[in-house]
Length: 129
Image 1 (cartoon, rainbow, N blue to C red):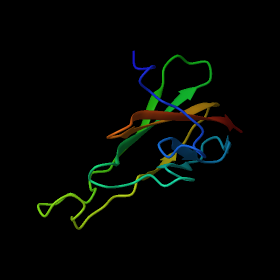
Image 2 (image 1 turned 60 degrees about the horizontal axis):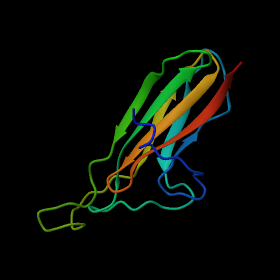
Image 3 (image 1 turned 90 degrees about the vertical axis):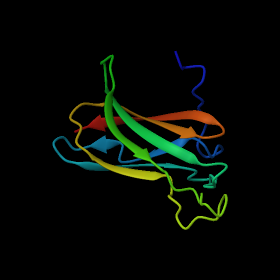
C-alpha cells in the first residue's frame, strides 16, 4: 500500500501539495469548474531537473468505499532540449481544470507527482444542494 509514500501538508506552507479550487457547495445537475494546481502560495519550479509531472483528480461520494477517476493532467514540457537542460522552447504550467457534475456530497482528492520529491495529496469536502 502506498499510504506511507504519499505525503501531505498545508499547501500554504509546502510547494508540492495540490490545491483544489472549487465551491464548497455544488448545485445538483450543474457542471462546476474544479481547478487543481501546485504551488499556489509558494511557487514550485518547472525545470528539466525539478518539475511536477502530473496531477490526478478523484471523487469519493460520502459513505462509498470507492473513488471515481475525474481527470488526469500530464505536464511534459520542462525546458528539455537537444541544446541541454532548460534550453528548450516549451514549458507547461502545473494547473488542470475540469468541468464536473456531482450529485452527492463527498470529497475531492488530488494526487500529484514531483520528479524529485514523490507523491503528494490533498482533499476537499464538498456539499450538494
